[in-house]
Length: 115
Length: 111
Image (cartoon, rainbow over the protein chains, first blue to last red):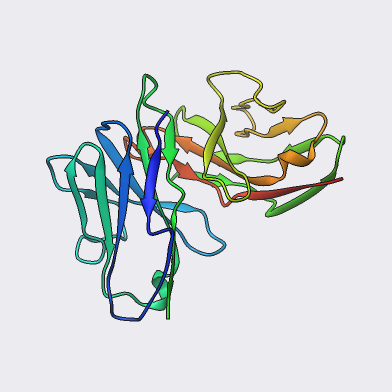
């Protein structure tokens, strides 16, 4: 298994500002994932963060809006840029690790509210 | 395109009653199916997956390829089963590393 620490756990931000969310894992992992869960909706993958290369973004998500860093095998950040109220969501960090690479582990999430 | 449908947003059952959380999927090929659970104030975690064919916390789920379903069942619900349950699938068409989630069902077990 993996222990994932995500911070902040929640924040309230003003429109037009940016917030950086941090994700720390207790073991080295090749791939880290960032999900968004909008109110009443399911989890949607934003991007896959690979160490040593650019993040891979899913359709509908762009690097300018959601820049991601992955400086090493245990850490990643997701920035939500130029926020608007539509960005109010829970943002989740996730990893696959261990023998069975098909099992994903999730952080506790960051609850973001944009005023 | 892939799709995971959980028709019930909310489901309430009495303690000791059987419970079934429905999940239907649409996918061209052979996906892997999962159930994830989120208890109150806890993070999302894997409950079970179809290839394991296990019973976890009394829950089972059988993949029915003919009906494209992966319903989660438990014969006798317990209060501690109250949680949010998500059905998810993974496969080549979801992207090599993507879990595709349903919208979730909130299960409440009434004492």
